[in-house]
Image (tube, rainbow, N blue to C red; front, side, top):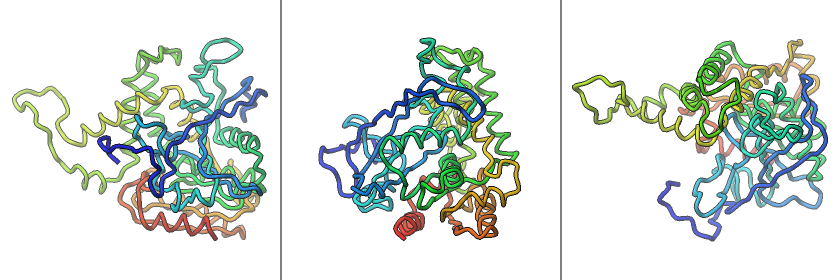
Amino acid sequence: MNDSEPISNAVDEGEVGFVDFHDFVSRAPFHFEFGGVIPELTLRYETYGQLNKEKNNAILICHALTGDHHCAGVHDINERKRGWWNFMVGPGKPIDTTRYFVICSNVLGGCQGSTGPNTINPETGKRYDLDFPKLTVRDMVRAQVLLVDSLGINKLHAVIGGSMGGMQTLQWAKDYSERVDRYIALACGARHSAQTIAFNETGRQAIMRDPKWNQGAYDPEDGPFGGLSVARMMAHITYLSDVGLENKFGRKRKEVDKSKEDFDVEFEVESYLHYQAQSFITRFDANSYLYLTKALDRFDLFEGEEPEKTIDKIKVPGLVVGFDSDWLYPPQGNREVVEHLLRGGKEASYVELSIDYGHDSFLVQSPDLYQLIQTYLNF
């Protein structure tokens, strides 16, 4: 849907329509995996569909690094922007809201309404900034468990997510198998490679070397936007594929003054990256980016143990999906998880899809992905 398309007040066929967020608030202290504590926490979330009387039709969707709780529908008539997985969630879609009650929350550590570094600490009246505790994917999942508990749901029909969301999904399957019927993890893996950690660290350094970062205590209206934009541009390249970029942009040029070198945008792909960067800095917090990427780098499904020890904790069937054009989370990393599961006698499936959009392939409409998720959720 482009910006010029009007949005009527009627709900289109297959659409969840207008949605509003909710805030789950826990007033109890939250203890982090590495020992930090915050006095309370908030998770912002959206729901779609209706929870049945038995409360056994709930699906939790976990978002990727730069995603949020707005998974489907639109917030208001002026926003026009549909949720990041709108094509997947709705009446008659693979995650069918006439059948399932769907939950998506902004993660702990995020910056779209959930408690994170840019949140006011109620004990000091100031933002947490770098006083926010060291964060892990397990912490994100434990906060989601509190949210699910508050909705009176004892067991989820499924947990599903891609990239960082896929890591949360695997953490759910490992730590809370008794509370999940099945899981679908897309474009992730058991741990980051050295190359992925290196990309993340370069992005973090771009932010922290921006003079306006100010050791994390920056003005939200005048923060390290230069560094954050560079981090976004570099990360966004890793989400795409060479084939996808070539097909979309190639070496297309913009009209420029050819008589003088000013290092302005010359190629269409440069313009695209600048647009992505500018859009990102208007909606994302620099400290959240630092915390979330570090949490991803720390994630290790096997926690330094022999894989068999971890695999034994996963007692629920799962589907892991890799994409052949994804060089950030290559297919072999996804396949490795399933190979360990199968060797451990677990029920698991691996599917590798051929889509040209790189790591972001799970965010692109594809009949194969559409059918795969629909079939696995409904078996």
